[in-house]
Image (cartoon, rainbow, N blue to C red; front, top):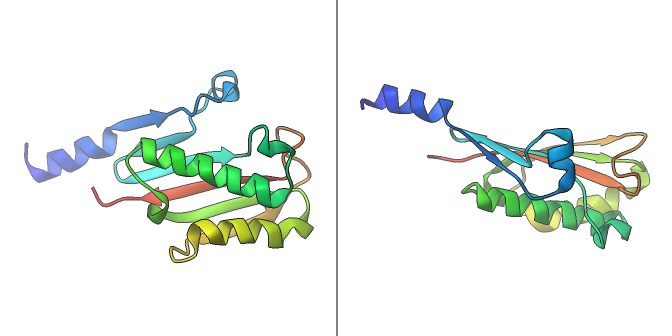
Length: 136
């Protein structure tokens, strides 16, 4: 197979990753999807017992779930090039930023933080999605 055919084959190859969260099946989505060297991690919230914690605890838990999904798909946090963070209280920004910095201090992906009126589940204070790029 020549390099162009191999590249096209890699671009068409799709790998879906599930984290086992029941809502993934109920809603019909994957925790992460890899196509070629691009990886998209769905919006991720903490789960119990961290879901009962403050925004810092929840953000750390969500980022750990993202790290696990990336590991399963053959990447890690240093491959993350962008995050989008949703909070229900803009006052939580400093707490969420602290957790984000603990995971991405030297990596420094592009990032957006947005306040929203609510998240699912209702007790979630923060949701994070990530985009990663690897060198195949």
